[in-house]
Length: 124
Image (cartoon, rainbow, N blue to C red; front, top):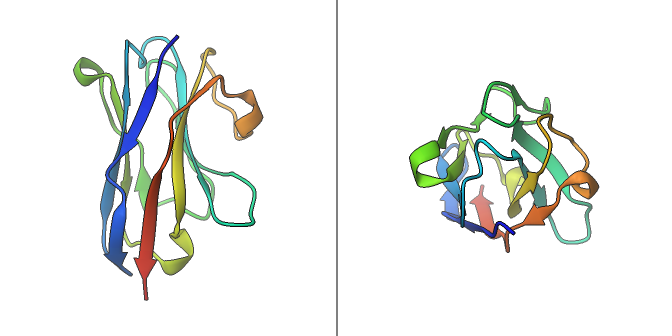
């Protein structure tokens, strides 16, 4: 069973950038679709980015399109979330999920494995 570990969160000013990492204990790019989600206190987990198994397709909601991307490094078993032009409303805990399917899902309920999360705080 693959284990996922997120890292790279922190405090950043509005307009700044952060790159989050999701590192797997085994091969993930060729085996799983990977999604990034975020959750603020009192809110539901929200989809922010995903890539299909193999990385051939990526998906973003309108709220982050043009600001976030989901690059990956197959040799490092790592999927990243590159976040640019950050806004205070991007403040949340960020989680990566692995799904044993080729296609992605915007529903967190359809992901099989999760990391522990990393906190991102954007100050105004």
